[in-house]
Amino acid sequence: MIARLSLTVALIALVIGAFISAPALAQQPLKIGLILPMTGPFASTGRQADAAVKLYIAEHGDVVAGRKIEVLLRDDANAPETTKRYAQELITNDHVEILAGFGLTPLAYAAAPVATAAKVPMIVMCAGTVNVPEKSPYIIRTSFTLPQNTAPIAVWAAKHGIKKVFTMVAEYAPGIDAETTFLNVFKAEGGQIVGSVRVPMQNPDYAPFVQRAKDAKPDALFVFVPSGEGAAVMKQFAERGLAQAGIKLIGTGDVVDDDILDSMGDPAIGTITSFHYSADHPSAENKAYVAASEKANPGMRPNFMSVGGWDGMMLIYEVLKKTNGSADGDKFLAAAEGMSLIGPQGKFTIDPKARDIIQDVYIRETKRVNGHLYNVEFDRIPNVQHNGKY
Ligand code: PHB
Image 1 (spheres, rainbow, N blue to C red):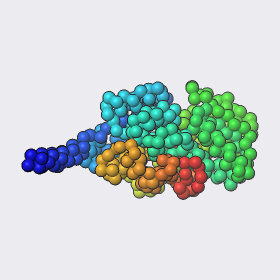
Image 2 (image 1 turned 90 degrees about the vertical axis):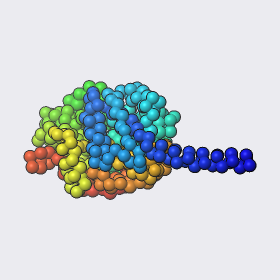
Image 3 (image 1 turned 90 degrees about the horizontal axis):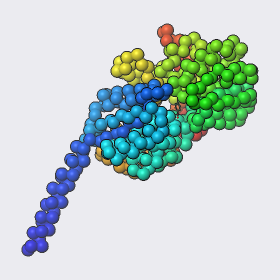
Image 4 (image 1 turned 30 degrees about the vertical axis):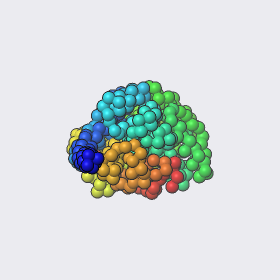
């Protein structure tokens, strides 16, 4: 009798417990630690991604799968040790369940071991070196990769009468990715490389490198510099008269970044780049995106870093809907792998093996449209993988 009574009590306790714990989890806020360079030379990347995260929440509400989303923004000022410290503090002290952001590759590298140790999903919204997701099994990328954005322009150049190219890249991991991809693909297409330089990241002075490019008399100069640096390259390209010497400017779209493109003026016109996003992309989704973004952030045109932030938040929301609000690392990753979504750039898919983004890449020409500079897309290469294969 006593045994039966205690069994009944235990069962009642179990039932009550189940009722309490389900809504309790649902009502617990879900904190996301967003780490970005909000100050320093790459502050534009942080501003763009943060604004997109805010816009996504404003448009979709701050509750998903019953959980209130709270974003804790931290400024790492492009210092990897600061990124790592914030990642640790956000997890240990603030109990964030997801890490996001990562404006440059060294910052993503620094946070990766923290995500691995804590088994916390880490959404890379900005960095582009191809091996970033290999640094932690909890990384998913919604930005782009350098091989993805470089291979198409190498093929396009070889097929459009460009026989000799000089390459100039920023001297760090994404620059090496861009250089390696361009050299391999362009040579495989029958092209010739007449010189390659890597410009140091610390206070870069492009003048001597652009002069060396001019002296090598190529048909085109291929450039990769990270977002924010394009205007300085364009200034040297113009001052040293490369266009007058018959040298075309080609590159990944980072050099004609929408955030600063309009300030570059006429020297940017005619630049041919391959890239996954242009603010001029003529889809209904993108028109609405640019309009909403410019309304929320007067004077700022959304660029590819914005799109990485938006797509990253969309991925978080859609995954949480599938996991009923759980951000458990293994469950989150399993739900995200293979997911296809539509962002401002068009459809993208998370490659289930590489945990990386597959998306269309466009060939674009910088033109003046209604008085403003835009990268106008004229060719599309569908479903380019993280490794540049399509
Ligand atoms: C990177 O550091 O991975 C990075 C940053 C800015 C870019 C591209 C790549 O425009």
